[in-house]
Length: 431
Image 1 (cartoon, rainbow, N blue to C red):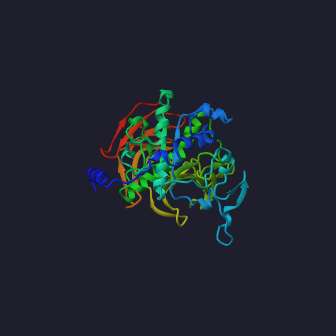
Image 2: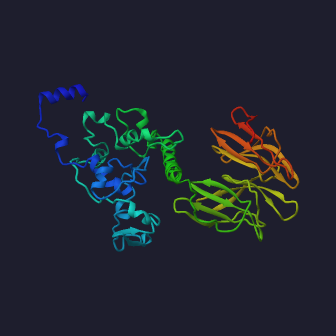
C-alpha cells in the first residue's frame, strides 16, 4: 500500500492511538543517563555534565567519538555476557569465574573481565514493540521505527557526532560516529553526521565476505587506533616464541604467519601463527627446509629462501604451498632462478616476486606466480637491481621500495609496477 493510500485509509477509518511520548518507553535520554557515566570516558561524550554531577558522578567530558558494535543475535548471550552453565551441555572450556558479581566465561573472553568496571550489562528491558528488531531500532532512534517520520529521525550516534562536531580538530582522521552492522543513519541531517558503517553492499556472497573483512578491519585496526590516538602509546602484546631475526611474515585468514629466521643456533625452518583476536602465538608445521632458511619470500606460498649450508648462502628455489586446513606444505613448482630477500606482493590470486639475491648475485627480475593455474610468468625487470627491498600493494599497483643494490649499499628507489599496463614507473624516492 502506497503512503497516500494509507493516509486516506487512516482518515476514513480513524483508530484511537496513544502518542509515543505519552507511553512508558526506554528513550535516548535514559540510554545516555545509564551509559554515559559508565562508558563515557571511552565511548560516549558527557552530554549532560550537570545532570551527572547531580547524581554524584562527575563526567569527564573527554570522549570525542561514538562507536557502536551491534551484534544482532550473536554471540549467544547465555554463552557470553549473561552466562548460563548447564551441566552436561555447556562446554567446560568456557571456564566460568565470578567477576564483580557476574558469572564470566574466562575461556571465551579472557581479557574483557578487566574492563567490566566500564561495562553495563542490561539483562532485560521493557518495550512497546512486539518484534525484537523493531524494539532494537526504537531504542536507537527514540521513536517508532514503523512510523512515517522515522526515516528522517537521526540515530543517537548521529546526534552525538553533530554535537561534538565543533570540537573536531584538523588532525582528526577517525570518524566521529563508527558503526558495525547498523540499519539506521543520520536521518535528514547532513552527511557529516552519517556513520562510517560496514553493513553495506551485501548483495552477493563475495560482497558479504568483503563486508565481513571490513568489519574485521574496523574491529582490529580502527577501534584500537581510536584509543591509541588519544594516548599516543604502543600496546605491548604477546612476545614471539623464539629469539630470531631476518624472519618473514604474511597474513592469511586474519592471522599472522611468521617463518624461518636466524637464531643463535643458526637458521630455522619453524613456523608460528599469531592470532590477534586472542593475542596468542602457536607453532604449526615447519617448512620442508631441513637446514632451515632465512629471508624467505613468503606470501600465500613460499617462493625461495636463503639456505646457509654454504657461504655465501644460496637460495632454495622450491615453491611450497601451505594448506591451513590440512596443515601441510606441498611442493608445487620450482623457481627458474632461485632467489631470496625479494620484494613479495599479492594481487588477487597472483604472487609477484621482485628482485632478490642468491650467493653474491642480486637481481632485477620480476616474476608472477598464479596460485590457481600454478603458472609462472616473466615480467619486465625492475629499473633498479636490488635485494632486501619491500613490496607493497596500493590500489592493485605494486610499489618496490628501497633495498640493497650491492653489498654494503642502500638505495632510496621507489618504483611502481602496474599489472594492467605491464610497466614500471619511477616514483618519489625516499628522502
